[in-house]
Image 1 (tube, rainbow, N blue to C red):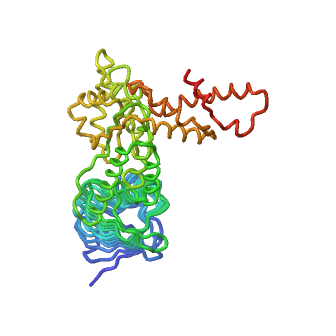
Image 2 (image 1 turned 30 degrees about the vertical axis):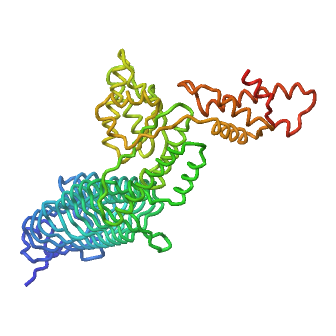
Length: 552
């Protein structure tokens, strides 16, 4: 015969009823607030509210423990509001527990903490306050049709091999992440909604294996879904929208299949490396911009080869094939004024459009930005610069100056190199480092650290521009500034550029800009000496006489 114990009624307090209740009994709480705790070990009991869900409140605030603590046994709790302050509202350390239509509230602690191999099934449970919502640590069970709202940290944490099935659950307005899966956890997340998080919506890290199915992630301050290195994930028919860039981030060291559904319901399939969906139209636009640069045929071919390799790797991932680790760090060698900075910017934007880098931002630095003035200062400066460039391109111009010999400054430069080498390896999937400088000096730079050369995927050689290319560059600069060349001037420019010595002081495109500036000044003197108001054509036209004055 199953016993039913009423509180208050047959027993004045909840504690009294629990002490005498036989296994299999049901303890029924009338509406009201009970300043008590439920602490059960090895019991088989049901505790439920007699009225509407939440009408019976078990408030353990100030009582040095959770409102509900179970260390073993088989316990079912239905319709209660469970409240604590600096402890979890519910702490399960073993056994099997079923929570139905309960409301959980905690102060500093989590609303529900399950560990010790326990099985915890939560159905229609609402979390209204807590540091964390649900924490499954070395535990299993189901989370079905629950709601977690307004916690100060992570909404759901699954860790240490825990494998709950989370279905039909809404996680919103959390201070940090919506769902955090790590330490070899193996959950299933199905038909859930995650929104309004202070950081990423769903994060999978540290060798975890996860299935995320038909889940809607939106309005997150961080990326929608993040799959970390060493993890295995299937993201199937999910919607990810109104998130930070990139919407979905898959580390190159992860094994993942991603199929997204946009708001129109059309499937959009593909694996996203380091994060974002690929933007084919933007890739085409950027490659067209690269092709429009004058000269640099070899450099353009090398960049296209790099882009082709990245694309094929994504196709391989999508087919479930292995893909080796790829470095996106590059070496640009050659004289000044050959387009190295412009190509570096385009390369960063290409990596963003391909989903390799989250934002493609471009940070250009030199020796003074990396090298400090006293011992320990350099590592701090170099690390700060590197962190600021995360997600995009760090372009170090005249990088060979870091390896200058002689004096204390050389030691600090070496410290900067050593710091960069370690950071480049630790974060090779999160940033592209491009070092640039003269060809011979860059060879000396690479010898400054035994591991430096191996960090770079490729060296791109930027050759000096010839006279034909410099005339085209000068013409393009002039037209952009609303100037045109008079008859005979292009031929004279070709002859002038052909006579310039291509030594290390030769500035390439800078020579063309410098010459045009001199020609504009010569034109200004010529026009003022005309004795009349110049016409529009006069104001636009650069003449052979202007070139002669500029090079005199």
